[in-house]
Image 1: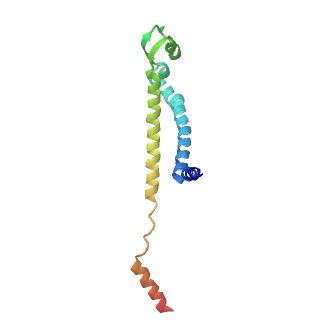
Image 2 (image 1 turned 135 degrees about the vertical axis):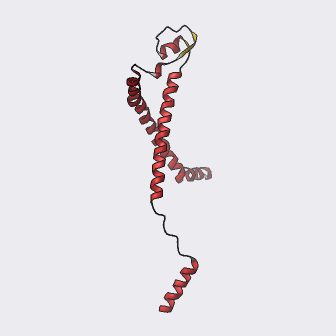
Image 3 (image 1 turned 90 degrees about the vertical axis):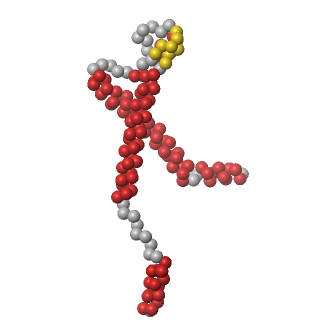
Amino acid sequence: MGMMKEFREFALKGNVMDLAVGVIIGGAFGKIVDSLVKDVIMPVVNLISGGQVDFSNKYWVLAGNVPAGATLAEAQKAGTVFAWGNFVTVAINFVILAFIIFWMVRTMNRVRRSEPPPPPPPAEDIVLLREIRDALKR
C-alpha cells in the first residue's frame, strides 16, 4: 500500500501533470504542423519549383528489382529501398515546429519582462521603526 501512495503522490505532483498536458498539446500541435507542411508549404514549394514535388515517394533502390516509377510502397515490396523523402518531410516539420516554439518562448519572455517586478518588501529595521512609531502615536 505504501508504494501506491508514493506513486499517487508522484503522479499528482504539479510537474508531472504539466508534463502530461505538454505532451498531449505537443501531439496535437505536431498534427497541426504536419498539416501545415503537407497542405500549405508543399503546394507553395510545388508552385515555386514549377512541378510536382512530392518528397513522400522519393527513394533510392538499394537492392531488388524495382520497376521505374514505382511508388514507395511498391518499391518496398519489390526490394530494399532507402526512403529519404519521408525523412525530408519530417525534417521540414521539425524545423517549422522548432521555429514556432522559438517564437512562442520569445513572446512569453517578452511578456514576462514587461510586467514590472513587485516592489521588494521593506527591510526589517524599517518595519521595526514603523512599529515603534505607531506605538508612540498611541
